[in-house]
Amino acid sequence: MVSRKVQLACWAATLLVFAGCTALRQNLEPPAPGSPARGQIEQLLAAVTVVAGRPEIPGYERGCRQGQGCVFGPAWSDDTAAPGGHDGCDTRNNVLARQLTKVEFRPGTRNCVVLAGELDDPYSGKTVEFTKANAGDVQIDHVYPLAAAWDFGAASWPLEKRMEFANDIDYNLLAVTGSINQSKSDDTPQSWLPPSKAYHCFYAGKYLTVAVQYQLPITEGDRAALTRIAAGCD
Image 1: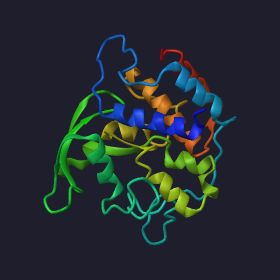
Image 2: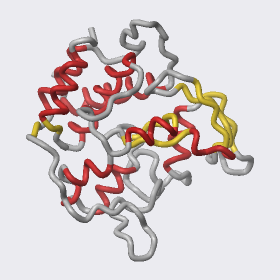
Image 3: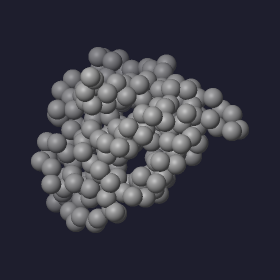
Image 4: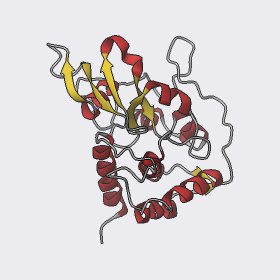
């Protein structure tokens, strides 16, 4: 029998491949090609812990300037046990290099610093041009937000695990359109879903995979939203 850990790794790999694919753009917006099937999402829903609501845990402070908490470590640190860690490239560039097409690297950086490329946005299906000069047009989303993770259990994790979570390019990070990332903020599925319904199945599978991998819960409201999504993922 295939272990749950192996299943999760396979689903994560499938979802990451899908994140670089172009979706069908139809008025009815069926699930985009490569989306997980209903059965996969239902298995993840059965495996995740469900809690009544999101608690408010004090102490979350992402900033790392003097006097700030830096509770998930320096942003995009290469000094972690996460996939891609200690490879000489920061996490943001690792994500860009993985997801963008037509990638141009800064000469002399050993294919590390991404200067330009094209993103097939995994939340909208739109093609976004990325350039270093306008870096904010493409941002890196934590699918399971850091602030939510803090409230749901990460506050008690050692710093090393929080840094791994914040830089996990296999499970929790996606390059997305900057404006969409800003609109999502630290919301969970009961409050935010991708603007294109075609990507709801992908997002549901991705979010639940992270939750199960890191043993983080979802709320009853999240489960209701994700269950409704799963019903349309055949």
